[in-house]
Length: 578
Image (tube, rainbow, N blue to C red; front, side, top):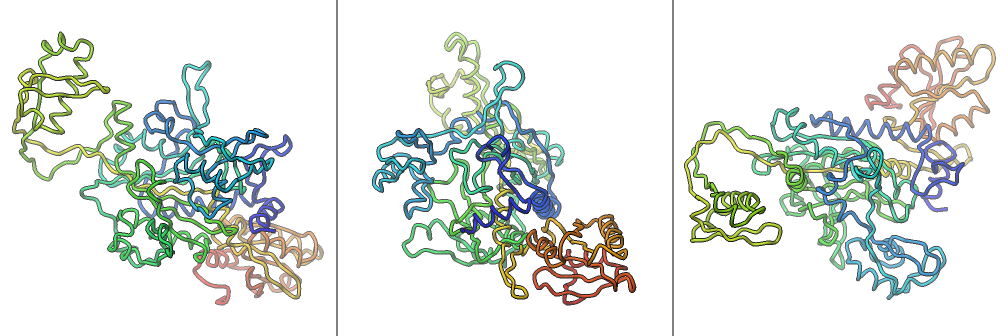
């Protein structure tokens, strides 16, 4: 049984996650988090919020899951949010073409290859349909848009889409959000929420799904002035798998400090390097195994059109490397596109310390000339002339100037533009921020934490399975048991369980079966501590406190038990120190 299969079996049996709507045959790519999984997922989200929102001083919002079509026209998702699809001519099954290549060859990142090359590789390796085993050689590889479409309101007049990422909900609200930040750069806006992608072939349980949770941060910075506090993370060692190493015959992971990675130009963005350093410590905090972890740089062919540099945090499971986070420097692409399509101002006004006098090229086109000459295009030509004067005043040095509008060229005598260069006094300037984006897949993080925590050992001659989860992340803090359901032990144990719940601990009460079996049940869901009430408890107000990983036990006083568990969970003390 593979690591993933073992994990899926445990997850279903112990209530972490399972396929949704099973009573109706289910729907691929949709999963329900059970009681343990929902609690673990919530703990991961809380830990992310603590590190990337609260401690960084950022804002958090919650935007709608459904947004109108113009949002995604501006963002480019309608035209370019595609995956490669291939259809079997024999059985009609559709598959993700790049995944077939990765599964059947040594090529690791087929997504970065052109469709035609992927088609040739499928033919050269005679890759077969996973459903019916017919050859897929010669079948076309096409693009498939992953957006879920819907209608907003009755009829079809207002098309909308389920968001494929939470980021656009932040970008479109930038004008309002910048006011809340008092128009002071830098500032960050975070969001934890659902996103939806109509995946061609969902697989690997929580890894490739159609509905998932993202935790995303959009950090808006002045590219000319704002610098990250690199000194806070400069000594953090990063396992880096650069694009250069991926393309080399003998390339591999390099272990560099954040400071070295920046100085050597391995990570080109200081802001991305900063967040790689911050994230490294956070991954360790939530239980990602650093021996099965790396940061991989995007190859040129897979680099998003908006990103100048992008790194993925990847975790190894079942011999495969799974992306759990993307770190991208998006520039001002998103804000520029939304400004262009909406007509709104997506800039921040930066006040100068003192007014400055500058030369400003201006035009005041003569509409009495432009109107008769260009008809309905007159105002568009005038706007293009104003933009050209600001961008390239030298274009007005001759007798005529030419502008392009929607692919058409318009030539205007410079005299009719009233071009001039004037001295003006300015108190500040409008700055369109650049965006640094760490984007975390919460479901994949949950899957990774569970896979890396899954442990098998032997206790008292019996095989045991337990989840080596950090106490902060464990779905349940403590299991409370009566040794036997007699002589008042059960009532006493229930009182203790109630008191611990009131103190804020997540508690499971269990009086079913032998005490050893109860311990094993809690071990399998990662509960770090168990409290057992016995006869000595009734006489001396003490309990047996058991630690999950070592299975060691100690007698502790009931008085202060909640505080003791809190100190253990927060890492303020150790079990050995009790």
